[in-house]
Amino acid sequence: MAQSYQTAAWLDAPGPNTKLYLKHDVPIPTLGPGQVLVKLECSGVCHSDVHAILGETKRMAVHVGGHEGVGQVLKLGQDVPQSYLNARVGVKWLYSACLACEICSLEYTRCPHQSNSGRDVPGTFQQYIAVPANFVTKIPAQLESEKAAPLMCAGITVFAAIKKARLSKGEWVVIIGAGGGLGHLGVQIAVKMGYRVIAVDEGDEKGRMCRGYGAEMFLDYKIDNVEKTVKDLTRGYGAHAIICTTGSEAAYTQAFQLVRILGTIVCVGLSMSHLSISPFTVAIRGLKVIGSSVGTEEEMEELLGMAVKGDVVSNIEVFELAELDDVVQKLVKAQIVGRAVMKIPV
Ligand SMILES: [Zn+2]
Ligand SMILES: [Zn+2]
Image 1 (tube, rainbow, N blue to C red):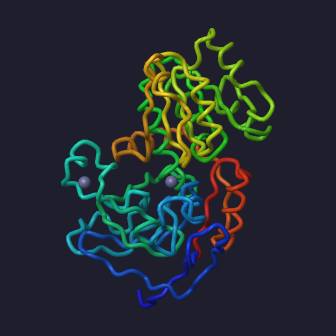
Image 2: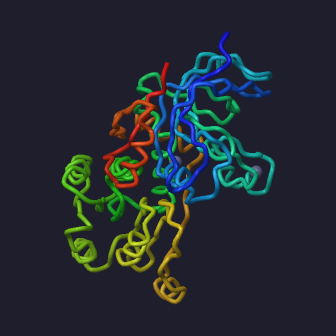
Image 3: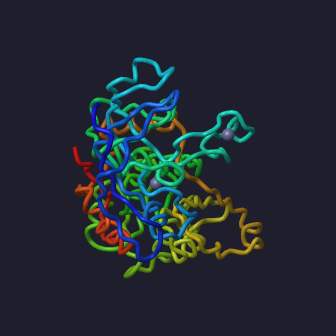
């Protein structure tokens, strides 16, 4: 590979009025030991990218965001098995973890020493990325890259969140934000696992999609009385679990109204406001409030297996990388149905 520069969707600095633009003189990264060089084909756009770009979450330390990339391994660093060469792989939020600390021994996705794509290291909105080989996901041949990309963050995150709710078949789950990147995959996963799904979001298009995926009910939070309908459907108890994929305060407030006694709320959407529930209510109702973000490689394997069988299919809208700034604005306004996927220039 003779060229040493590449194109990236560049961010001078995060902030509310920031603009992303294509920069063509970004150095192609050099490989460290154990790393592979991936030529990215596409990258999904996650809501946490939007928060980071707008400077709402922990400050991005790099100029290139993105953590849902799929591409081909072009080059191997020292000590990487030959089997990685030319493999099609996914690059995820968890860029690396120490794999040696007490937290890693329990759940390495929570490693306090982890690095994240698009936050501590340049992410997937660029042509080339150097990534530790043991943190990439090999993509099954049956899956198109653009449809596999959303599984690398949205899919695995909602999959792990649903698992954490520990539901039994036939139990009710409400998915808030069901028409979004995580939610639309979550509806399919939950239905396939045998749970009864109530989808909450807004608008006819998202409603049609969620019902098409097997949600028993779609509730438009702008029009419908969500609490009353959920209570009516569940014999007055409320749902066994609420998966809140939206980062809004109102969504979390509603989640506590929809959950039954002994139920579980899984916090996935990144809201910066505090949960509006008292310890009294949590104690008296015996609620479980669990946080979930990303998931393990074993969970990823299981999810990819479902995707290969067609049990979970990403609903995507594909854009050129140059349009990333517009896509961020659309995501702010909740105007993307399913997942936005950026095509990386060849
Ligand atoms: Zn993400
Ligand atoms: Zn660790």
